[in-house]
Image 1 (cartoon, rainbow, N blue to C red):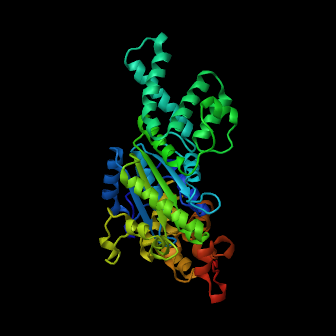
Image 2: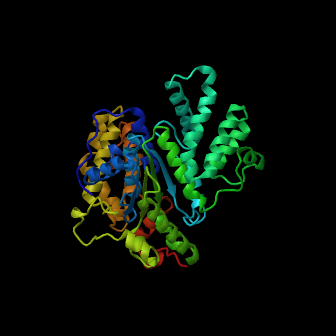
Image 3: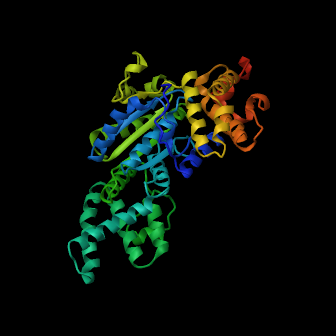
Length: 444
């Protein structure tokens, strides 16, 4: 991480500032506004922007992001997702987990994708607005050809069938469901239209009557998920979107599942990477995140040799010379200097919306922020790399909020840092442990 502060605009909207500060107060990564906080990411910008541009032109990209806890993987992917949104990408972030979203069941991954799908104009789930926009675009194309009103419906039907031929090549049932959805809408049957849309989103247990009306059967399975992803990418492109930016976060959780499920998941990941590189998914920018132990350990990627070969990247050189175009990107994590720089950035951002910016600047000056960063790092066993979440939460919620609200509050006199075990996650608790028997181990 660089110690340089990000280039922030001199004015920030109240809504953007509030969203960022509120998230940090909760100890969470903000959903948006990350360009205001980004430090040390400029070295990736040129290469990643070139990849996004290529995806806009019909290419597909796969990227793996590695880093220890606290290195900023979630921040990085959301920052990149914001850059994609500015290029009119649809985006989706999925947390991989054994119970909710197992990677070896791609139909579940697809379902989570549609549930989390967002566009620059619509929050999750944006699947239905995207499909409606696709049909609206078809109508606009027909009207642009000068078709009279009395023939509009007929010509839209014809153009719909022409466009669905492309979707049908990849996912016949996806195309059939789109057709059924439009027919239900035209008939004013909202119940059937909503049910068919749910089926398009991979939801199970859709009413049989709705499936019959759309001419589809059964539920989406593992093998059909690829076809549905192709169909979704086609609809996104034809409705004016540049592509889909998809994040599979915390893939390292695969190390903790049963060996048979782990092997299936690793093979599914290998297959997904191969399909991306084969060109099957034009318009897809796929990112996975994981720890070094997942990429390098025998319970992770190295367990499947073909997958290890596809992800192999040389990290023996100085991190300054890491190749941003490589399949894997390494996030080195925070140092004390970069943590302090981030704290100063947060303080300045907070002050922009404060009624007492001078008091914020003087009582939470650079020296105090340095002292607080050192204290939080010390409370976590000196491991600054796992300190950012707690540090920012304490800075905003315990210090800046009080300085802002109370005229006579001085953090050097009236605040003593406490880090309680109940507010820490497992990794932070392990870092703060003073004895070996306090470290929580995950045993098979």
